[in-house]
Length: 299
Image 1: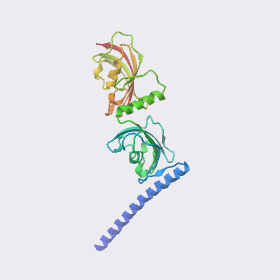
Image 2: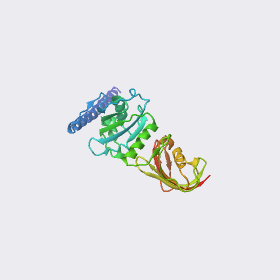
Image 3: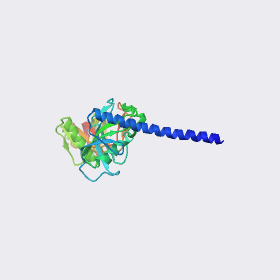
Image 4: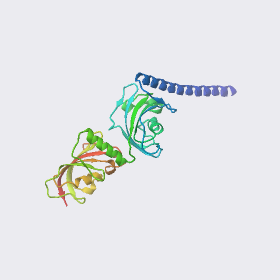
């Protein structure tokens, strides 16, 4: 019995030392890979005590030092150190979250690095995140990030502290990027452009019933998520308050394009359907892009 206990103890000690050695090897591997990357690209980076490397491109200048309960809104570019995955579209790569809350689709080290090293809003930081604080040994297969891959982020932390302010920044950037003209903004945050006010005599009110054709897209990706023709639909039946508001600028026969911030769109709730030609999922906090044509109005 004593021999068995001694043998079990020896195996346990060996296993403990083996695990520690493996952990230290990963840390060493990450550090060497990052140091080689920094040297090859002539970067000037500081290594934090967390193991994350960072460069303050523009110091955060607005507000108090971030705490876990602060809402932060940021965009980022990302590439793996091996160059096999690159994502540079800061219109698509946008995040709204609490500073101390880690999203399951983002690496732990990302928001940790923003909060610890950038600290304030209205700044830009570059972070090289070791694999053990990124996606670890398994990587992120759905976007083809391999296991044990360290990540190079550049983060733009916006000077906003509300979802509406953030959505407004994104809508304005979208309008500028795509050279759009003729849009007006309402107090609710809705951006709209009247393509045709309508030649009919029936104006649309909040109590109206309309026949309407519309196409709905996700603003930042351009993905068409729904195209429908609806007859005799009450204005109040539409889930988006922004859609309801925009239609009331028209008469029968009118056409309008609406860029709808999430707060008067679907808000924090995701929306999905399997009805019709489009099986779609609208993520939470999505900005919507509608084209609508009202062909008949009943008051």
